[in-house]
Image (cartoon, rainbow, N blue to C red; front, side, top):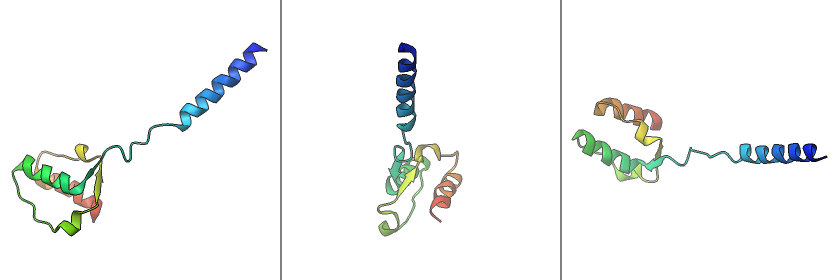
Length: 82
């Protein structure tokens, strides 16, 4: 009698844990304007853009998109928005 009860409790606990997995889509977002400012500082360049183009826009996984040069880095960001 105890064994089926324990198995049932284990399966319920496992199902609950499996359904509550952490969603990382929103966890690693940064505002696009902040990302562009970081790119300007990192690569010593100036990027001109209207604020209306970048306001209220975010980039997912921004910290993983940086590359060795500014051109490749920007291509990875803008491909997402075009």
